[in-house]
Each structure stands twice: as structure tokens, then as C-alpha cells.
Image 1 (cartoon, helix red, strand yellow):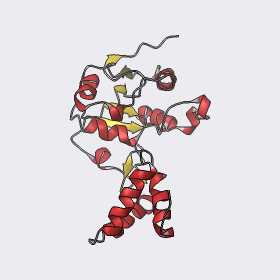
Image 2 (cartoon, one colour; image 1 turned 135 degrees about the horizontal axis):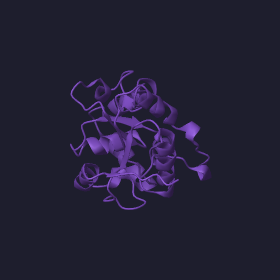
Image 3 (tube, rainbow, N blue to C red; image 1 turned 120 degrees about the vertical axis):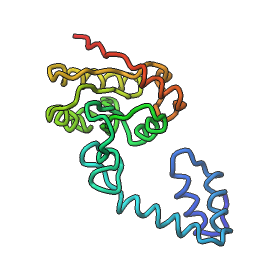
Image 4 (cartoon, rainbow, N blue to C red; image 1 turned 30 degrees about the vertical axis):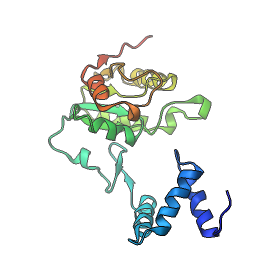
Length: 203
């Protein structure tokens, strides 16, 4: 791809480094911004800069937040005895869009994956156990993608909490095996949470 402008080329390379955006899409976006006269590129630059300077992780659930404690964890109207355990903040958004869950969340930050060098110590598992130890939580809903790594993570957490008087359940397998929660449609995901089933821990 030949460029008449080094600045345009750098913008295309930057945009195409994002997931799901190829060189042609990046060029189309960059050219749109060049031709735009509403200062859209300035607004985008400011918004993106804030992602690295102002955004935080909630110190309770590890969800993305503007403050130390996210709006969900601050809520007084949600069910305090149920925790929905997810991999990423994107999963929280997907579940919230279903309007089927009114408890709280805990974002692990991924799943256990020895092949990628990700162990339990790299995830927010200790923080999850500490939340359970403080009391008041009756159920963990494991809304983790049903991959081999996801199943390993569910099994590991279930073993950790087996003596803590907390029920562990998994979302019904309406979500395709190997699929990610963010790609499930709202109706399927909502039903899978509403029809969750107890998790049987194999010795």
C-alpha cells in the first residue's frame, strides 16, 4: 500500500494494529478523519488518551471503572448474595445487556491457560476467595466460556471454595462450546444465566 503522506501512513498503521481492523478498513477510517471538518479526530484522540490515563479497575470486582469502586458495586438495589464470575469486563457488559442478572460481579481477568503461561496467580482468584470469606455470598455463577481453559478455571475455583458453604453453578450451555460470551446473543445468554445448573465437582 503506497501512501502520499507519512502522517497518513502512520495513522493507518496505528489503526490497523487494533483487533478486527485490517489495512483497508484502517485506511478508510483515516481518510474519513482527514476529510472531516468537525474536529472528530481531536475528540477521538482525547477520549483514547483517557483510556490510558484516567480509567481504573474497580478495587472490589476488577471491572473497568472511572472511580475506585464501580457503579455496579456501589448499587444498593442489587442482590448481595450472588456473585457472577466472568473472564473480562466485556462479559459484564454482555450480561448486563440481558437484564437477567441483578447480583454482583467478579472479573477474573482471563482464564487459567498453562499453554499461554497464565496461572491462578495471574488472575483475580485470591481476591474472589477473599470476597467469599467476608461472608454474605451464597452462590457463585461461573459465567466463563466453556473452553478447556474455562472448564479448568471453573474446576480450580470450585475446589478452592468447596468448604466455604457457597453454591457453585454454571450457566446453561446455550452458549456454543468454545464460544465467547460477548458473541452470544442477548436472549441466549440471558436464558443461560436464568437456567443455570449446579456445578458437580469431580474428586
